Length: 43
Image 1 (tube, one colour):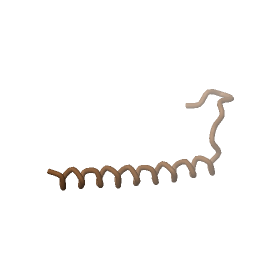
Image 2 (cartoon, rainbow, N blue to C red; image 1 turned 90 degrees about the vertical axis):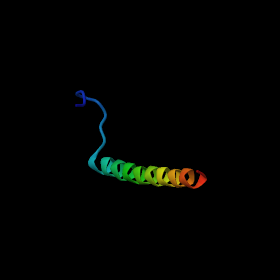
Image 3 (cartoon, rainbow, N blue to C red; image 1 turned 135 degrees about the vertical axis):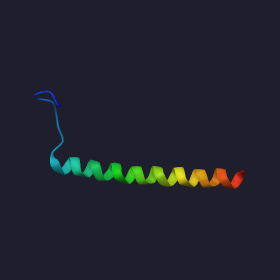
Image 4 (cartoon, rainbow, N blue to C red; image 1 turned 60 degrees about the horizontal axis):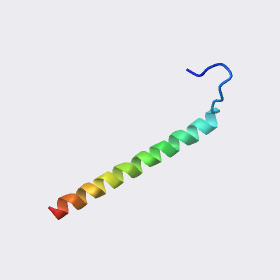
């Protein structure tokens, strides 16, 4: 919970942040999968 008077995101900024985090999560999954394929191919 935020302290009284602590800065907070408004709804729109929070939604933008959630979308960006979702996109980053997808990128990380693709990178992880690609790295795993490279490792599998090199063995």
